[in-house]
Image (cartoon, rainbow, N blue to C red; front, top):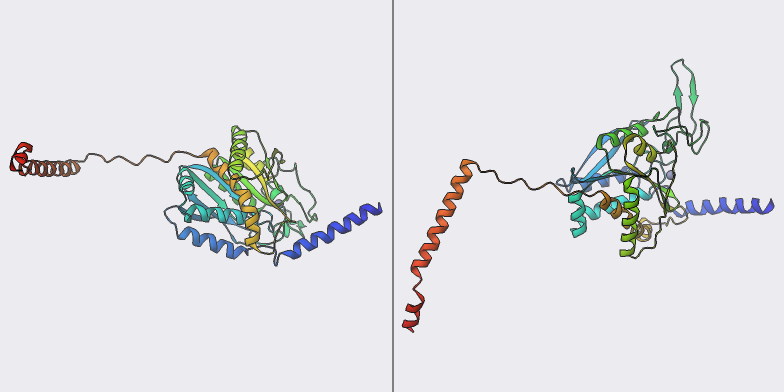
Amino acid sequence: MVFLFITLILAITNLKVVYAERPSALYTSKSQMIAQWMALCDAHPEWASYESIGKSIQGNDIWLFKIGTPTGGRVMYDGQCHGSEDGGTEILYKFCEWLLESNDTLAKHILQYNYHLIIPILNVDTTARQNMRREYVLDNGTVINVPYGVDLNRNGVYRWGESGSPDPNNDYEYRGLYGGSEPETMALHNAVGKYRPEIYVNTHNGGEYMLHYLNTSLEAKIKTLKAQYEQEYNITNPYPARRGGRGGFLSADAAGSWNASGWLWEVTTWENLTPTLDEWLLKYYPRAFPVLLAFAKAVEKEPPPIPEITLQPANINAMLIITISLLTLILKFKIQKPPKNQQNSIQ
Ligand SMILES: [Zn+2]
């Protein structure tokens, strides 16, 4: 008992130390992060665009960034459904910067063969885990106080109620009044419905693993590709993938409501957060890169063929003129050039 108590005290102290290592709750503030994504996309309008998919409890926009070819294989990601968990957001920003600005052959290929749909910040109002819901007012006037907000990753529409807590005073995983009761949850649910990505990935900080909700044909394909890329880049499986998740999870909603291959990805541990973003990316980007490549490759699609030139009368005339001019030139050249035997005789 005493031992357990000491372990608990040590764990709590350790947790505080871990949080103290980062100067703030996030590496990049929410407003700065969105500004950065917009600037990146504005600089590459041929490949990127963005839109608001809805508003949060406090009326802030939830942004979706779309990068690549719309007819390509679609992979949707979100970050910070838990307000303080920015691992996925940072990794995805670096990945998209590489896609758009590196000129790397592989990056160009992914831009042509995939369409990446990224919601960098779902819980836009707060750096706390749960959202800013503070009360529900029922039709009969009853007010339910929600002092710590709702856990968006327990508020999914599909099989809501299988996970999280029904207690509005729960400060960690209150699941809300009903599935999709939160505007952030519904903004995401509707965006998945609108774009119908083949793969949906919900990112977190916390552990280093991946969960796939349902067995789809993509599950084995993604695992195989992930292993292949990890071998190619000399990375030793930092994210073991296993079946998991429950109803109410956002990955379950994308799978159950929209038929996507739904994944939950714990990108980093809390213990490994470093004081600066650069140090953290140095450690985690190489681990995450094969996973990002595997998701893209698993659903990639040939870009549409370049449309053929139709033979309009104007085009036919132009082609005739070019052909006649070319023939005239060739004939002229032949006439001017003396025959071979004549050349010899001059010598
Ligand atoms: Zn989380």
